[in-house]
Image (cartoon, rainbow, N blue to C red; front, top):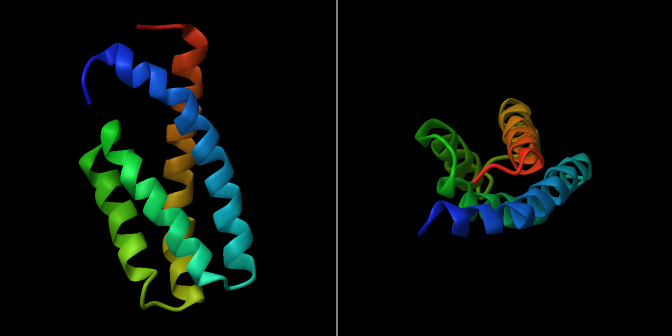
Length: 102
């Protein structure tokens, strides 16, 4: 990824994307739009490895992978376990940015 400064410059885009994606996943699940859920989870899977634990990266990857074959109800259950962790990442990144740390 390069330097910590480079990563820090990307974090506002991560906040915007994750904020929008989490809401969009909830909305897509509510109408069983698995195509949209897959696309959104795939996007999260792409950037989450840059700054999250291996366990969370694996959970996102597993949920995204299963979203290709599982029912909306099954993915909703998996996502219900994943969403709080992603919300926590979002809060932590926002706090980090608010502190102005380098």
